[in-house]
Length: 161
Image 1 (cartoon, rainbow, N blue to C red):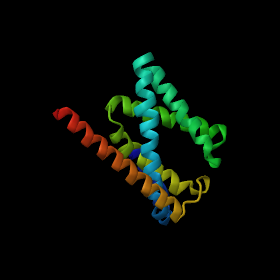
Image 2: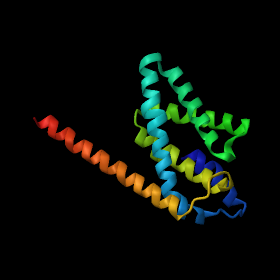
Image 3: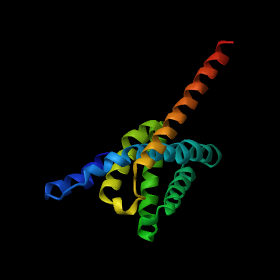
Image 4: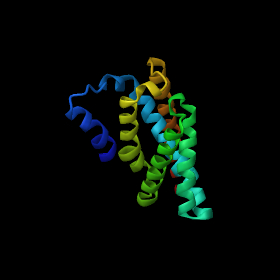
């Protein structure tokens, strides 16, 4: 959070550059959804399994690589420089997950602030966020929450038996 917000936003504000904060209004829910999806896919699912099978170093490297390649789906992130930068960012997220053991913490304190800052500063590289994007993301998050709640309730019933 310190590097993404402090390292990118504060210097721009210090020199009087206008920050397009208004963009977060439409982008906040889709960014939350994709951030948590990325953390659970690349760190919670992929990295954990590779770590158990091959060790933590290959797990972090593969997680970083897959994270960078995943972003090829965004038209604005297809240069070699972007892929290498995203590989480094993915390694950082993977190392944070390995050190904390908690991808909710990594999602909230590392990946989400980075996503917000990247979206605000490089919004032209992202798909246009419209009301439909926000509604679809909100419905998806609500469904995921409902599934997790149902799973937790079913798990508690099974444990009581």
